[in-house]
Length: 191
Image (cartoon, rainbow, N blue to C red; front, side, top):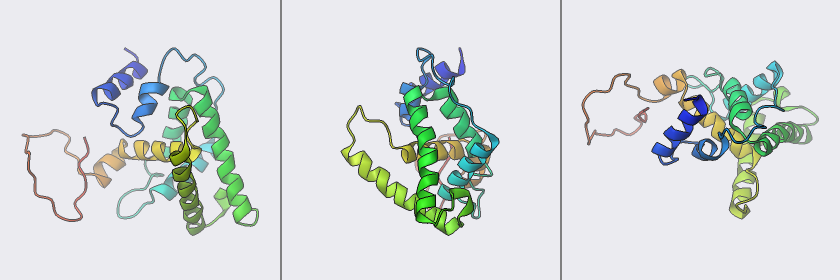
């Protein structure tokens, strides 16, 4: 069994409830022969994706998305699992985000603006993608920022730093406890 089949089956078992479940159910099919043929990410592209991801999940008292190497994860997922049409949306989105930064911040691309400006820009894009999702028809492509955000969350929370530092993680689970007291501010559990 190859990795794509395994991921598809796991997603089916979980009912597609994982973040990006639609990606696994629809995007990772061996029938789509064009996946990955036209996509190549440079080291600069991956650094750019790391900065986008770090703006979405910044380092605080826990590691950020850059520590989890989410940019490299995004590159692999887009190349290996996205259909050609979604790859195109993602790649064009990388350019659109940079152009939006230049337009808003006096010609400065995303990599040259401050963390506060990055956060401001991504908050605007988040509002834009939510409005797009409300009016989106089923056959319309996903908004590029939706794809970036989903991959950031998936990459971070399935990474070692995300699962062990940001979430509570038990490598060898013990007995099942149905009711565990919750204290405000407790971390969620990693699976």
